[in-house]
Every structure is written in C-alpha cells, then in structure tokens.
Length: 232
Image (cartoon, rainbow, N blue to C red; front, top):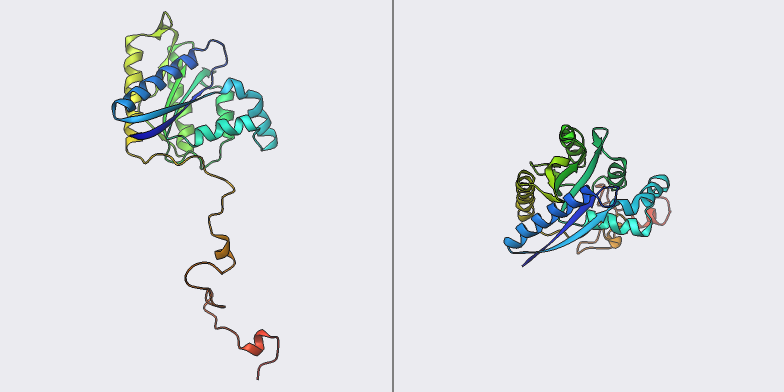
C-alpha cells in the first residue's frame, strides 16, 4: 500500500472559520479518493492562524521559530498540498501570502496543489485565477485545473450544497490523479545538506583518484619543480 501525505493549509482568521471548513472538506474528499485507489493517507493540517506571529518574525529575521519550522517542513515534505485562503480586497489575505513567502523558492517545484478560497460574495471567485494560481505557478508547483470557491450561498446549515460538493469532488479527483503519477515524497529538502561527498571535494574520494593537473589538462610537475627547486 502506497503511503501519501497531504498538507492542508488554511489561512482563515476567525473561529470558527468557513475557510477551515472548506479545507477540511477538500482534505476528506481527497483522502477518500486516494484510499479508494489503495493508498494510505496522512493529513497534516497547518492552520496559519496559529503561526501568524512566527511568520512575521521569520520575515524580519530570516529564521523560522521551531513551531513554524515544523509547519514549513510539513508542507514542503508532503506529496500534495491543499491551500485555502479567504479573499480580502479581491486577493488572498496577507497571512496566506506571507507564509508562502518564507518557503524556499525551490521547495514546491512539481508539487501538486489544489487551490481553494472563501469570500463574502461570489464575485470574488476569480481571485483564485488572477492571484492564487499565478502565485503557485511562479513557485513552479502543479496546480490542478479545478479551483474551488465557496461563497455564503454555497453553505447550508454548515454543510456544502450539491454544486459545491461536486466542485470539491472534482478537485479532489484531479489532485489524486496528480499524486498517482508521482513517487511518494521523500520529505523536506535539507538546505544544509552537502550535494558532493566531502572526500571528493578534497580530491580523495571515488574509485579513480584525481592526479595533479587532471582537471585542467596540465601535466604533473617534475619532482624538483614540486619541491620548489629550479628546473634542470
């Protein structure tokens, strides 16, 4: 059974939050679809409201506090991401943008992402296309075609109506399709990891020892020249 991890990022500010409610429903639909396809799914929920001060401190100092570091690793090390923001002034809110600003620029390359948003009017639904999708495209993530928007009229008694449920299922299916095409994630990248063996850096590693001058094409110097004596 293939193990998959899903990071669920919610940028809702209120408690309770319709943004978090939408994020939870998208996560449940995606999990159910992956389980149906034979995967074992772990959900990692990142409620950005809990990390607001840490995000600001990271922007000011360049270093994430421990709690934020764990949240960042949960997102960058996941197989796929569900990212949900409330729409303020026709765009994502500042907390949502600031969180993704603190991620390493290469950390989401080729990562499948399902984007979604909530707002006070259906007229803000295009913010997903002119603001949220371009941000993830800039980060070179793979954003699934369906973006899910929920306006107040899409909720009835705290649950989604039929039209919203269909969009949730379609988006979840597209995210599951993308995950099926990829190998499981190996976790977050270590920014301090060496990409070259230390012995190779010293010219002492590998099966073929490096001889002096081999990298530049120069011939090894005579013994006397290496010792600092004049030639001849």
